[in-house]
Amino acid sequence: MGALSGKKILMILSPSDFNDEEFFKTRVVLQGGGAQVITAALDTEEATGMLGGKARIDQDLASVEAKNFDGLVFIGGKGVKKYLKDKLVKNLAQKAAAEGKIIGAISRAIPILVNAGILVGKADRSIQLCGKIITARDSKAAQNFGEKLGQLLKR
Image (cartoon, rainbow, N blue to C red; front, side, top):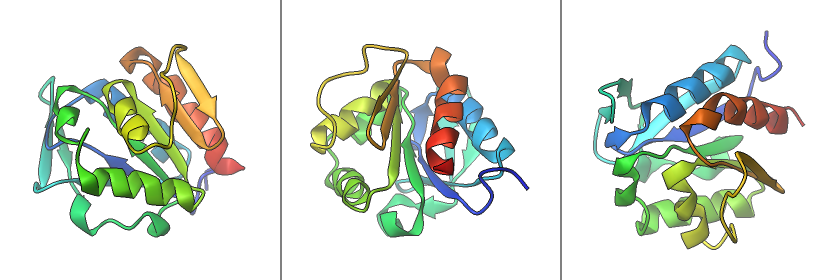
């Protein structure tokens, strides 16, 4: 049993062109800690990364409710631009923040949190923590990002 046993984490991917390193490295750290990781995207059963990696999608993003998870993680990549102005994604981020959930965003996904009005500024450090929101500047920080998410979830 890992320290994150019993924790449910939703990782939100774009249907295509998500950042493989950001997703796979973060997921491995969280699952390694014992967390249950659920993936979500809009309108697809399998997402494809910029480097060709495949991720099975567990839940359509339209049916996701923040209250069912301990934390939400928005993964970057070129495809995330589909979500930057999406009302569904904006509302999900806002509800998660209002419910006091741990929220993470990495690289190109950070503007989702800014557009939702729950994060001000930008990630000018490799890893930035603001209350229950954690951001990572780029895929090089993915491993550390996953570890910091795990530490927040343990609290």
